Length: 308
Image 1 (spheres, rainbow, N blue to C red):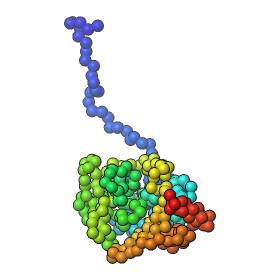
Image 2: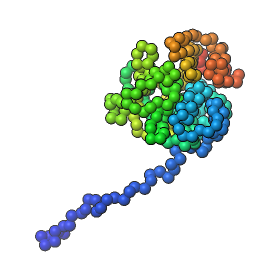
Image 3: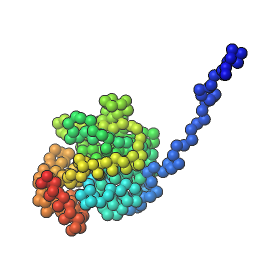
Image 4: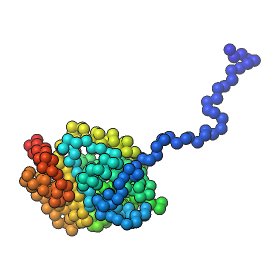
């Protein structure tokens, strides 16, 4: 018990001197699993070959080739199959079986490719704004930041239409025409200080595509988001057929039986196709070949969507 002769000694609130540097938090830093990728098969799939050093030219070539060869699509949900995000499964589906995928599949495959080629990358999530009414949406889209020679670039092959054709310089106020498709990136602060907005020009107006923050995420995070998007009853991916592909100056999109073709010169078309032609359009416009059983399942699901 303390007395006047022996007052209670104060208890130190912190150790004397600076704390030691923290050890690495994670034991596994092979986040993007480039070693699990069959790189030769991927390059054959997208039509690339030769030496591919980690340079801006390589990044651009891979981005454009991937986007043209591998379509955006949600067919696994219509077929009742799981959406798997590990690199061997992504390679099997999109490379060997020549299918496509949605944003998490597409950008995780691209991340594995870029990792294997020696690039440094960070993954982000984004709030899709296109087609919205101004109310906030959750961050359910995937995109990548790739650093090359000290310069940051945005890469995204999984937006499904209206997004990047090739990597975009990560600079505030930067406006770029990518083969005639006009895009602009601006810093905003509606949610936080490190928030950005990507917009596309539709010939008359700048349209909001998505906003994102620069807090890095990992494939494990995408797994949680993907589970939500593939299981929630109101998910847009589970109640319609969605397919898209950008080839140079032409964008193709199929939503159920509505086929839209958009070109950089402002021409294009929107037409309804017969339900029985969905399989043919998937093959001819998007390079997706389904067998007879798969075609029947997809057509039946689309018929149900149209009747709802």
